[in-house]
Image (tube, rainbow, N blue to C red; front, side):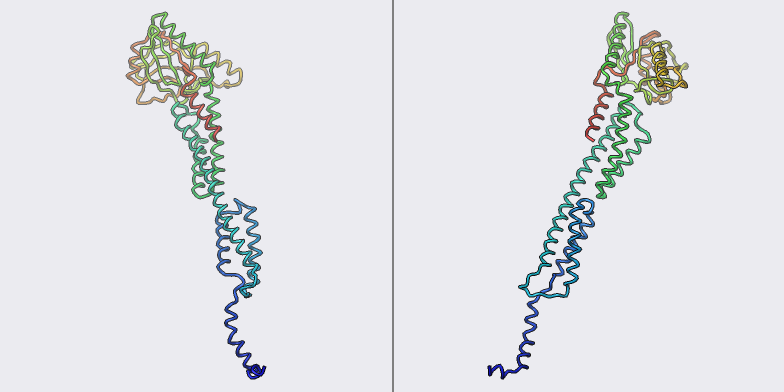
Length: 382
């Protein structure tokens, strides 16, 4: 006691002041700056990843907690604590940091999943477009190309651009627009060409071909059979096939002919009524058929009565088997075109009154029905 008295009050104060820096260096800030900066970076990442669109509930929970904790950070930024004191704010911030990091990972995973789904959908649509462009082109139909087809291609390109830009949702929307257009085109094709998969009609065509071959055999004469789906002309003699030529059809030749100017090639049993040689036809050589015959007229009249064909449409028109004039192979009125060396050989072999039977297909598994089946499979997938 005497010793303390000897030190005096001034001495005690000096000792306290000398130990204050040591005491203060043991104190800590309420919130480390690097922890706050880490959460701010997570928040920026979530905004850039559009977390609000992908995981709205989880992101709203994060934002709500971050706003509350940031207010506490601002209110306690000048406070210091002893190392042994419990720091609830720092604990809450560390928990939010962990939740934010997990949310970033979840958002990226959701984005990857959406992109994969959008990519798969777009790939199916692109495949469907390629199928229409290649397979339908192979059967020679021009029922699909047009403004709608171009519109579908535009939407597909837009979907691809959105996907590459990371906008999976917009990519899916553009793909859906393209898919609807392609589906409508598939319906159009099926309505126009579905008869190539009609077993009853194919049986009718087969019967017509059989009658023609039997006639050739019984009359020991020549007869012609043409298959539109197979794009072939076959010449029979005495009931036996003696040659086969590839043919070209007009722009809409694959369709069933209904009236003059529709571009379709008729189907039926005809005969050659005239042979036009050099100088009598612009098509090198031509064999004129007796189209329209009684069956064609009856179908035309029935279609007009049913309102399927307007009164302004005509039945008249000429259908020929002919060669090529000045390199033109695409004839608008439904004729059958052969290359010139082949029409020359056929011209020299046949005579007036030779039977010519034109059918859509010879078998149910034909080029047109297979394309329609492929389109149907693609429709189910998309």
